[in-house]
Length: 289
Ligand SMILES: [Fe+2]
Image (cartoon, rainbow, N blue to C red; front, top):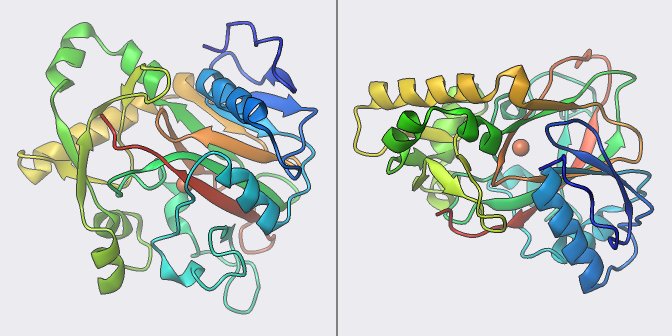
């Protein structure tokens, strides 16, 4: 969709960042209350470009939460470590240990391809991630276009996959990525759910694969066979030709569409030497169909 001309009446300037997806938005202040037209323009641009990079933002957590709330209900984090924050809907994504020193081990699941909250009955529509402190270089985020990957599958394969449903599980996700295991309370908060493998986008109607690290297995299939299918599809869908890599700049707030993308943090900086802090807000979406 990135080859379409941007609408001329959007209340911001927009510049595509790659032929595949992603666009930089300038002339827009997310810290100032926005009207419905501005909100709808952002949503339209998000449907078209999938990743929007709002440049030159200056966002306190409360302002980020207020901006995000204009797009829907904010999602609290299943991980209860985050619930004591001053603005609890704003989740810190950082590499700090208990002493505030940079360390490996926190948020390690972010390095696996995933789509936010797919283990929930109503997963995230969009995530907003604001750069607070960046390492001198690296600390990139990658996005893979699940609609482009689906479109590239042979027609026969699309037909084979049409009616498959996938079990997504916070508990299984934590096991797979080597993070602290889910607690009993977290499992109660987020029991396994099933979603279609092929998801129809709630705004654009386009079809895409709905997979990633929060998947557990294929409903009704032997676990091994289902895991093999999920791995095969992820390997296919995250080839370079479907991926955009975002190199963060100070002041960036990135908004991405979780209905059509997988994303992951890239381990390309000295994680034990440099601090990387981003503030995340998540808009709850609809039941995938
Ligand atoms: Fe994420």
